[in-house]
Image (cartoon, rainbow, N blue to C red; front, side, top):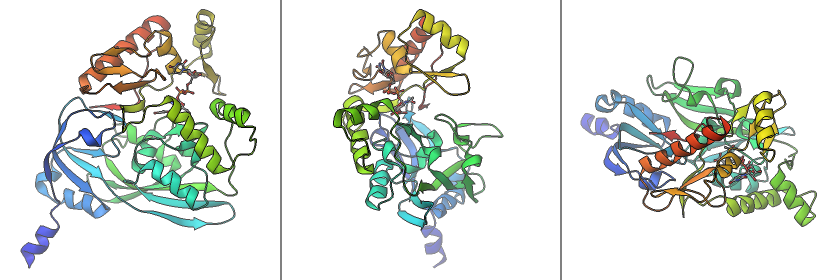
Length: 352
Ligand code: EPU
């Protein structure tokens, strides 16, 4: 009896697992050891197993924000926590909760089916619910932080459960506490299990992004329904972003750089066409895709790593790329953008 119950708490470890299906770039790499995590208790079971507890751990979500350049020796914790539910609903907001392993786009569709809009501008973003706060995903005028309520996580040292609210997550542009190492950061230190979202009631459509304004002008629909906005966002994304199920990629490869007004003025003087947006605090965000395009990279390749033909900010796997080729291409792009504009582009995905 004793042996049986002890065995039942030992996590199932899979050895030498191909990670190719688990990263959206479709890059080849192996996980020496992989454990599927479906609950907080699964994490605690890993920590209670001495052979696993003392090894470094790597938390794998939807794999849409990583570049695998090597096999992973760390224990890969593949997050598969499932479930979606409405937690509360009143005249000001609905709060919905989803397991970290749920697909992000699946959650967006589900909220619309529940009659709870608010996430439709974030349709079709690849990846999992658990990764959405790490990156503070954003698109078409909405960022995750605008709809975030709180999240649950497990500390990977102690196994204790934590709940973090928005200030504790320290959201920034494609940034959060989960991307920072050191004493103030939580990178590598916890595994997100569930995320809750606050969807304002009555819903307010966000229609200010240029691509959406174009759809309004094209269709003449000035008061679109949330489903209409969802369909527009899907159409806009499908027209210029590659579907990772068909062409391996990790979305935007670089962040849009933020520059001082002086830097922006210098660059505009040299390149009046540069796409830039004032951020309200005197700084400007530049369109990294424009900078890369201006350096002539759109459609180019190095080996099997390429720059997508319709959006220069997206690097793609032309079929059989290895992670090193993606990194080589990314470095070459960084150097040419730095050489021409004096701006250092920062990658969005985590390079492993
Ligand atoms: N542009 C070019 N050439 C290109 C690509 C872009 O000139 O090859 C110009 C476009 O004409 C446009 C400007 O750059 O005027 C901005 O392009 P776009 O509207 O496509 O947006 P983005 O800044 O490139 C950001 C996010 C995307 C998000 C879109 C829509 C980042 C790093 N990327 O892209 O997010 O979907 O806005 O909101 O902030 C992602 O993070 O993975 C992602 C896809």
